[in-house]
Image 1 (cartoon, rainbow, N blue to C red):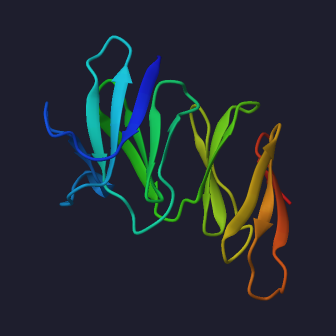
Image 2 (cartoon, one colour):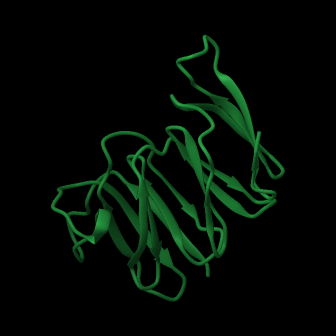
Amino acid sequence: MIVEWEILAGLPPYGPLAKAFAPRGRGTFREGLVVRVSPRGVAPWVGNFQRAWRGLDAVRLHPDGARLVVVAGALAYVVDPVTQRQIDCFGGDIEHAVEMPAVPALALGGGSRFTILFADTQWITPDVGIDGLADVSVEDTVLRGVAGDPMYDEPIPFEIDVAARRVR
């Protein structure tokens, strides 16, 4: 599936109404993260994704190559771009969306852990800290960074081997 997307500055003033996406599939909100989605062979559409209280706005292709992952204000939505159906919604504290082509996987991190999306499953890592994740980078199948912990003066380094599902 080939799909293109674009984050828009706001709701379009013309054309069909934007499809609203909210946690648990319902909710009342005005304007969230507005994304134009253009799947190959299907008419383009606009999604309005309710944001969490803060954080990252991003759109990534799901590792299965068919779905999209929209992170709206730190809240992740997994959507089918053809049917415009919400498949999953999680997070609320996501600060990092790291693609890992060597696995392949998509690592969504925030707070104290990562949710790793694979083509057909997901893995939620154990906590790697208590107070936030920073300096996140990827090398091959390993995520590296530092995690905050109020018990220590300095951030604590971590490594997550995503392919082996091992945290150090």
